[in-house]
Length: 178
Image 1: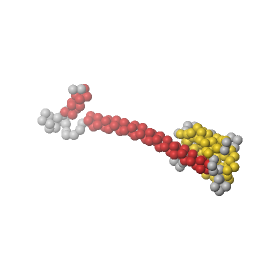
Image 2: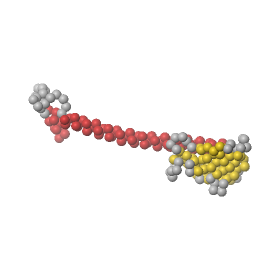
Image 3: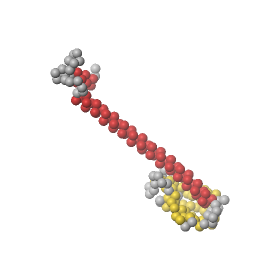
Image 4: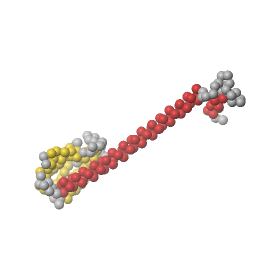
């Protein structure tokens, strides 16, 4: 018998008669040592379970953020392709952060600006943001380039607003004008 088993046997049998009836010193029920041991095991189990849940929650959060980033990247690419694919009179600013154009369908003057807080779209006199409602994810690009009739979006990336790191991105995205 191991040392712990001997102690537990001694503790549980203390004060009991051989026939199992309680002795003068003992009563039916749990001893203080048994209660403390049970409490210690429950606390240990709770700590382990808490650690496992924390790890699972962090992993889930990363998966959700990466999925949302992929969706935003795809949405941004689709938006830019739809907007700029039919654009007319395209003018890119010197720093490459702003592209002005006439909408190919309505002829309305429009512009898209890439800022640290995401894309700002100005169309029909209203300015809106291309940003997700969850987790403050934003899509940004390093610059727009108008070359050979096509528009190239360089350094398109998705990340948290104001953060240095990104979740996903693409180096170069070429939009063929129709």
